[in-house]
Length: 601
Image 1 (tube, helix red, strand yellow):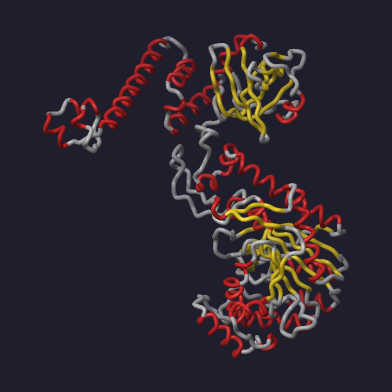
Image 2 (cartoon, helix red, strand yellow; image 1 turned 30 degrees about the vertical axis):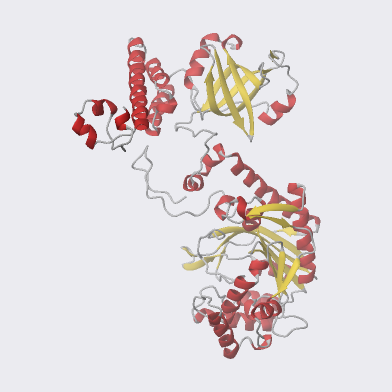
């Protein structure tokens, strides 16, 4: 064997290798370790074939159901490929449906206790005992199956983030003859109902000892093991149900997301806000500078836009006398998909009469500080920029938050003096910022409007300074067509954006309520759209008319639920916080059903 150890190996079986001539052995090189590994593999394969053959011989004369169960027993689940497992399991379930031992899809199973309540109620059960005075029923999904003999089988049962053990002992079964039948038809991944007694093993594992186990819904596919989990992101995002079954962290992310939304609602309700709903389809895509999705209404014979923001409708409600309104809902923007953007996303917007943007800064600080403290018990959280510990930073939500001014702080960073803000509508000002962007080596895609050029500078030099929550203020009115002019600096607006770790989370401003100025701002946006800016807004005459009836001094605020959830759950990919994120079409058909079309879910 030693003479082989120094040679690398090309694919060939051990027995074939040993039967070669010495000259052939020399040209087909193999290492000593590879020889041993392949010898073990061949031996294991031979033993597997022998087990199947022996089992088949011992089962001659049995019925089809018993033969199929024997086949699954002889070939362990670990040795099957997924398609083989699916075929065998599907055949087994089909026989049950045709009038077998039980109905694999019953209509109802009465659950007396969820697993969390079971654990709490029977936490005092003594080691090595079974409390036969109590009979309860629970349900969940089987995640493991371990046989300790023909009459004793253990299962791990999981549901709602909790786990208990099923200790199936034949002597406690109400109908002893059903024990073997139930054990044979239940596999990993199946959803089962269990009626039995609480107990605890000698090792201290809280268990339910069944009088009866009922198959409620079989799992036809081979379930991944909890130890290895589901790591592939494509699989996790496209098959979120599988991700939730296997990965406990995924479940916790969406529980936290739900807590964030609930806290926002409770906070605003406590301030006297009224939750409302506004249309998702509009004749004009207004309320934000974004490229909309277009659909078509057959009965009206006209195109409609999916909403990019609910802002204009909410402000019309304030005109109507609803002084404090908010909406939590979906927005749709036909823009790029990346780590922080998804075509559809969730926001919360509120509008508050008789307030300004300074009031909203205080409300924002109070809301976010209280939310983080309520969910995590602390005002400081950890966040990894790229998912590695090397980039872990601490985010402190303690108010007051830092503030940066677009004009003044950019002038400090770049060492230049900007033109007066009230000249930003001129070509001279646009050219100044165009030349400045070029001189800094930054790339701004056309159309190179002043708003886009300034936004590029902000993104490069100010947003990167926003690790802890930071308000960016001092927006020119060319960047904020719906915001009210600044009361002391001409050309600027009373607006702020809240950034965390360089990403925008909130946007708010004192609302523009002068109908004449509002129409002028809309017309300027319309000119930018004609110049090729797909994200610019059109003139919304209906909204302008509503302002003519009088909008009280009002402040408006918007929060990106998805972005905030990313930071609070330590995820740097927005797909991790969306149950069903947008994905490119999957060109691979279902291996178990080749006729199934590709899916884009």
